[in-house]
Image (cartoon, rainbow, N blue to C red; front, side, top):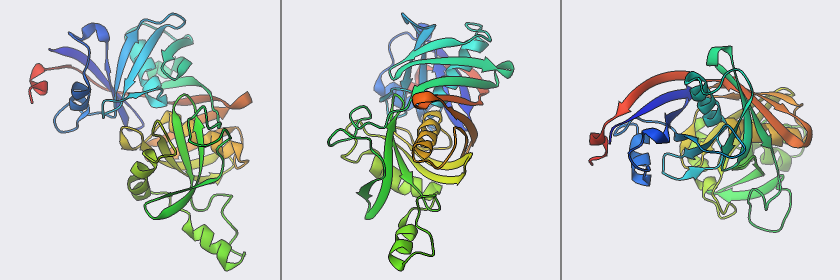
Length: 303
């Protein structure tokens, strides 16, 4: 039960990459939890299992959250996995495809492996595709109540579900010159902070509106080319950076007319560049850093 692994981070969002050929047996949920645990295991925000066989792509990728559940797609995970394939000389500087549970993506590695561009696919705001409970509709500027607070949110999918919560000082916030009721509504919008994400993120993740749970972003628009988000990631918790969250939040801000097509997404871990194309296709570019290679010992799983 010893097997090799590599560890990378993308703006502080770290993943362990394991080649399934190195595993003596398939990973169990408990093993995933142990590996990701930051005290009892190697520690990470998830596991990337690949390369796996794929019919219409260079390879397939399976993504595990720290709670043992599977994620359909991860922007940072895809950048890290692309760098891993590049490091192992499975790919070069050409564009290549990766199959995920959330759809096919195309990736290109630049700058000696330190930067990766991923064509993430198209964002949809339709409730039946995300999914969000209720009649079929585009989920934009709806109200949701958790923890004694009411929030305005939009929902989106880019192969995995997202709930984008409108924060204070966004363009939709009422002007301070308006009557007191409008100013009170503005004050009720959440501050964009790690504390807000940690307090309300888990409540929104598991809200009954989201049958498959959801990733949560708290959004502040800085200007036409820059947004700020704090992230609570489904199955992982508070996260320093996220590629799919950046994609969803940027798409929501553009959908509502607050930003243009080229957007810098600012997160505690750093900045990801998002380009929004026709029909809300998303191109994401961001850095990847290699951390370590090693071998996991069976003793880690002994209890």
